[in-house]
Image (tube, rainbow, N blue to C red):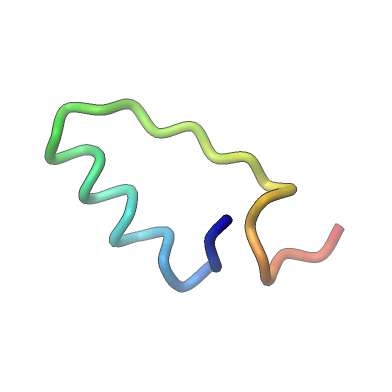
Length: 33
């Protein structure tokens, strides 16, 4: 699980490694359901 503030750095890290990023909104703390 991650928090909204961490998403940009995690997505950038994955993209720099050539990975596709799929976000699961239910697992992101800070988003309302």
